[in-house]
Length: 343
Image 1 (cartoon, helix red, strand yellow):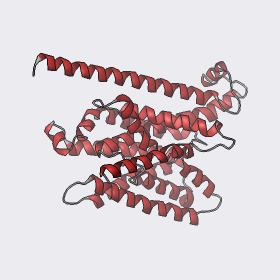
Image 2 (cartoon, helix red, strand yellow):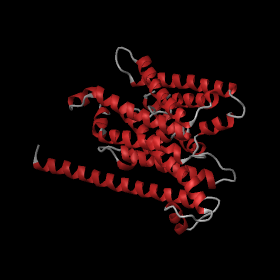
Image 3 (tube, helix red, strand yellow):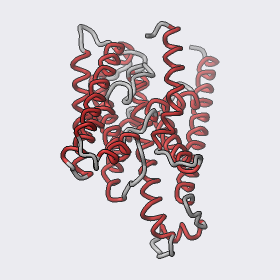
Image 4 (cartoon, one colour):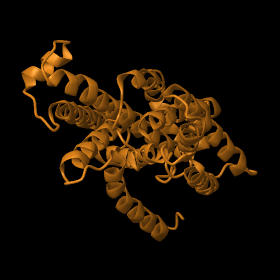
C-alpha cells in the first residue's frame, strides 16, 4: 500500500471521527436541554433559580415538592430508560444485521411486560419484585427464541420470525391477564403497558441506574467487536473476535437494559427500534454508534414526554407519542425491505 493510499485512509478516518464527536456532542447538548426543560416546565413554570435551590435541598414554597418529588424522578426515569432502550436496540439491530431485530419486534419486551403485568395484577407485588421478574422473563424469552430458532445453521430471518411468533403469544397472555385481573388494578396496568413516566419515584430508580452503569459500558467497550459481528460470523472470526463470548455478553447486557427499563417505565414503543437507525444516519458508518444511539433514545423519550404533556388538551403517556412517530417508519421499512427482497 502506497503512502498516498495510507494518508487517504487516515484522513477519511479522521473526518469520520470528527463527525462522530461533533454529532455525539450535539446529541448530548440536546439531551441536557431536554432534561432542563423537564425540570422547568409543568403546570407552574418556576424560575431557574428556584429550581436550582430546590435541587440543592432548600425548601422553596411549591417548587421543592414539584421539582424534587415529581419532575426530577420523571426526568431521570426518561433519561435512564431512553438511554437503555436506545443502546440495547442498536445492539440487537447491529449484531443481527437487521433493523427489525430489536427488542420490541422479536418479543423480548413482551416477555418482560407479561411478567410485570402478572406481578401487578395477580401477585400485587411491589416494584422490586416486578423489576426482578421482568429481567428474569426477558432472559428466559431470549433463551426460548434462540432455542426455537436454531436449525442446522444460524438464521437471522428464522430468529426474527420466531421472535414475532413469541411476541404474539405473549401479547395474548397479557390480554388474558387484563381480562382476569381485578378491575381496580387494570387502569394501573394499562397505563404501565402504554409506556409512561407518570408516577416515577426516586426509590424505584437505583436498580435502573445501576443496570445502566454496569451494562451500558460493556456494550460500549465491545463496540468495535459489535461492528465486526455486523460483517458476518466468518469475517468477525477472521478478525480475531471470539464471536460466541462476544455475542453472549452483548445479548445479556442488552436484555438486562431492556428488561429493567421496561420494569420501570413500561414498554415505551419504538424507542429501541428508531434510535439505532437515526444514530447511524447521523454519525455515519465506520465507528461504534452505541453512545449516539443511547442519546437518541434519551431525546426521543424526553421530547415525546414533553409533547404528550403540553402539545394537546389531553395529556398522553410518552409511549403513545413514540408509537405515533415509530409506526410510519416501521411501515416504510417493511415496504423497502420487501422491495429489496429481504423479507
